[in-house]
Amino acid sequence: MRFLEKIFEGMLWNSRFAVLAAVVGSLLAGIAIFAMATVDVVYLVIHALHYADPAMTDVARKALHDGTVSHIVEVVDGYLLATVLLIFSLGLYELFISDIDQAHGSRASSKILVIRNLDDLKSRLAKVILMILIVTLFEEALNMKLSSPIDLVYMGSSIALIALALYFSHAAEHGVREQESEEVTATDKAAH
Image 1 (cartoon, rainbow, N blue to C red):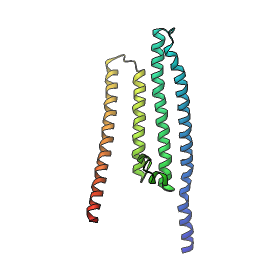
Image 2: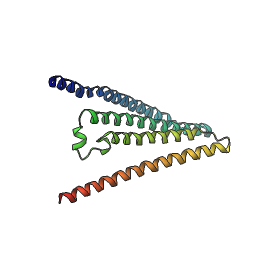
Image 3: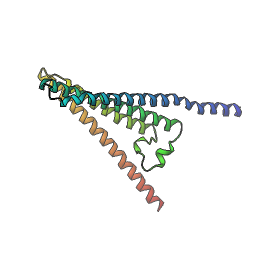
Image 4: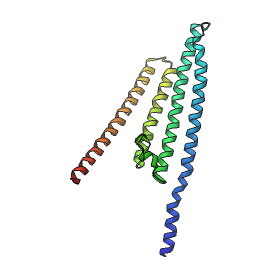
């Protein structure tokens, strides 16, 4: 019976490698979106070069300006989505497969990519998704036509809600840092 239990537990433990499909898929999707956003930037810059054309009318220049700003917001949105997929891919790998040695050993690496537990992954993803929502709101606000006073109230309310979400996100992060700092201090005192 012990032999069967050992085999079953080994199979169960190794089933975590199924996560590699999500890791590779998310990574490839992120790279694809990075590439698409970069191509959009190249075409955007080429298109924006016409802005200096002296033959362009003021109306055409204004339309080009507004279109360029809108496309820049779309590009930022694409890069943020690609970042979500990258963080998700790295986080799943670190949670289920193995720590990424380069992320933990290098002083130059960003600590945002070090995922210790599921809460770390959720927190990092939530922050980037919040940024995507902010960029999307900005994009919609650029294109919004205010036809009645209630439209202005709706826009102001959405901005206030985004600000509140940013505040709570920052407050939660600050509280976690204080708690970690207190735990380190307590550990240092216990060691002495």
